[in-house]
Length: 107
Image 1 (cartoon, rainbow, N blue to C red):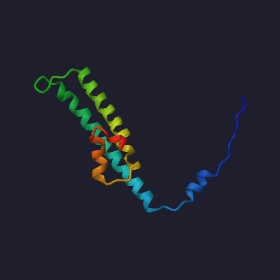
Image 2 (image 1 turned 90 degrees about the horizontal axis):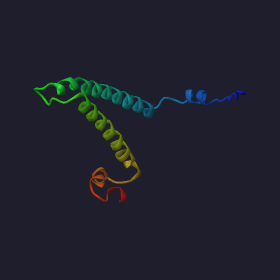
Image 3 (image 1 turned 60 degrees about the horizontal axis):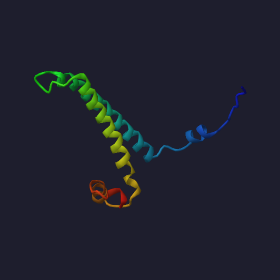
Image 4 (image 1 turned 30 degrees about the vertical axis):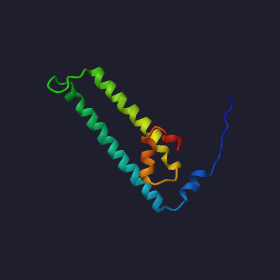
């Protein structure tokens, strides 16, 4: 098997780009998202044993796992549905109500 070597100057070109306000906003947005995701995982992980206690809900490990799976599936479906909202030029109120009505995505 022969290995083909590809030479490119794309990384060097990207390094020469000037740092702009857009880059700062992307870094801040990613940092905030990273912090919130870590907080969310910590909270969900710490309430599992509390929910198994018989004085609270008394859930089994399987029920807590199913709830966690439903949580992740809901996050993915929400990201897929609401992430495509930027395709429609409309006000914020119309964007939200578009998905809460039966004919929403067809508008």
